[in-house]
Amino acid sequence: MKPGDLVYWHENAWLMSQGIEPKVVHAVVVRESLYSTPSRKIWSVLRCDTGLPGTVHESDLNVKSVS
Image (cartoon, rainbow, N blue to C red; front, side, top):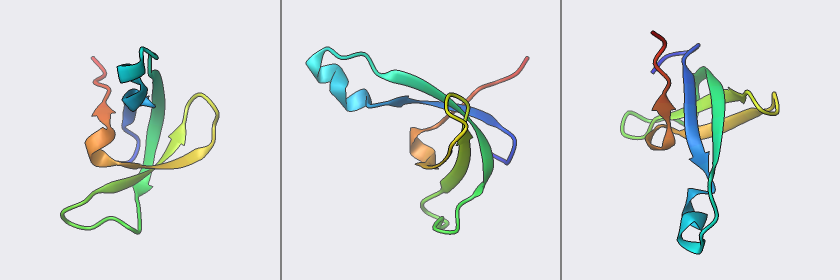
């Protein structure tokens, strides 16, 4: 993953067990977070739905491929 990549994740996916559909959130990767470590990558992103900055763990992200 690198800055500029379009990524997505399922927000509140844990609620699926209660029958609530998760929200798919798209974001653009801005940079690797200062809190990132070699074993735990954390990214600063800019959400596409709200325009607000956010921080996400790499294991939650899916990179959107552009063909």
